[in-house]
Length: 196
Image (cartoon, helix red, strand yellow):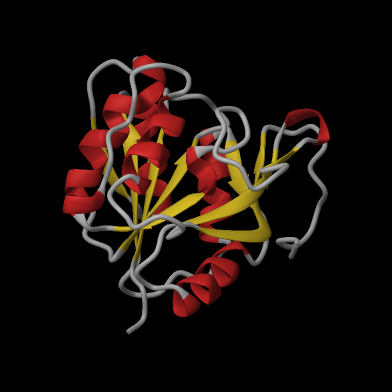
């Protein structure tokens, strides 16, 4: 079975949203994939329309976008959920790396790696620690019975990862060393997704 990706992009309407959506457009999307752009305001709606992505209007952005992500998951129809912030961008080959990992582990949640600001790479070690993992690295089956809850703080993505993994057997998480996403502009190399 070919996985269908639901890519959930939550935005507060920052101009960086355009770069994030371009990085998705540069990936090979399958016909069954969908991109959900969640936010408020004309700019967000216009950007979603310009790229041909689905716009999900939401109230004033708050709590680091965690409520918006929780709401967007109810609209997602794909077999797997992928998350992105508006200040992040996918590296070339990111979706190919995601699909390869899903072919090998279709029923398991997967943590990829990302370049953070100042050249840091997350995860630095295979450890579920706040600050070592991010929601933009996490791909999980879209099984409502196994989806956790986004916390309402800056660490809300960590809360989601941990509460989702609590629904799976121990050691179900796959640590994939491919670097698929960059954050902001500092310290991110140009080019393709970087294998471990």
